[in-house]
Length: 404
Ligand code: SF4
Ligand code: SF4
Image (tube, rainbow, N blue to C red; front, top):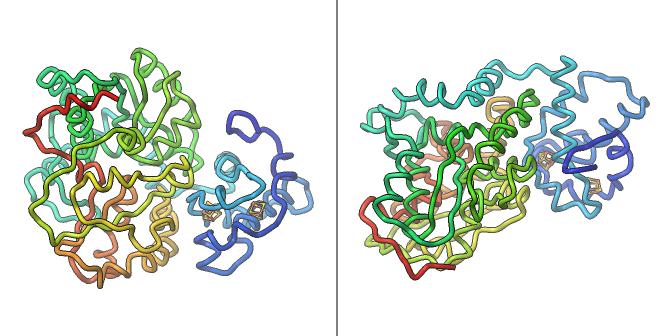
């Protein structure tokens, strides 16, 4: 393997030693008990096809699409099998060879994600309905996104008003986040500037390409080139993302010389002001996105969670997949629901008023929010991005002592 890309079938042939350490962490193996639905089983199917000892058959394609893509198997593997890279390559080959046809919603979403300006325009009515509180769609969580002002304009405006003097970072605003959940981008900008970080939002940036890779669709290389050109124009300490899947994609693809990291990783290294909270009865349950802890292999700093000012604890099974998988809830809704059912049941009896489920990935947020609509959780709860809990709000001052 070179540069995170699988180059030959030899990788498949030699890397897995069949130890089975990955089985118990795999949500599809735990759900079905089927060896073919485990990392080891999938690797065996792919290897045998590559060796020619198994004819290409629909079952291999089926088990390839059954994988959530959570990457929990990677850190569990003592042989360092590059499972995620192998999976992505295999999916692309299956789509290219017409062995798999992604759902039309995935093809449409992939096409739209690569056209962020169009996506922002098309989703403006939804942002407007959310802004005025006129929409209660089960897959849309609470928040008030800006309808017209972009995150790039907002960041420029706040930079002029507050003039932070600390390190300079570039922010990826993302396709889903900017089109639908822009309030999270705005909160991210406020948290960074309040902590004396200079923020630029490069013009010309686009979707990171993770969506295309999850679905096996072509086009992520073009998006990487576009992002690399946009981010190269800025001399920054770091390139930040507030969606774990986007961060992992940029880290693998490479977009410039500055390190790519999740905004929670960056902020976890600074000493943040603790938000003051009047509501002492609220309780935050923190869920850890797979692409953050298994993909990027980073944890959320306790100091960051303490800085929310809320009483918090990790959600039960916080390290397990929620079943979102970026596209999995569209591609395999029954499996996705089953995985979420096991994980979300605790919310029915969780202490706190309100009960708040916090995570750091928009697709995970949508998945958690769907638990009520699917009837898995029968009491109200709030779903939010961790950055929203660190948000000082519109009226803030810059902590100029935060120079690190
Ligand atoms: S990525 Fe997740 S679902 Fe897929 S094989 Fe690995 S652990 Fe199982
Ligand atoms: S843990 Fe790694 S080496 Fe062991 S069976 Fe799973 S993929 Fe193969």
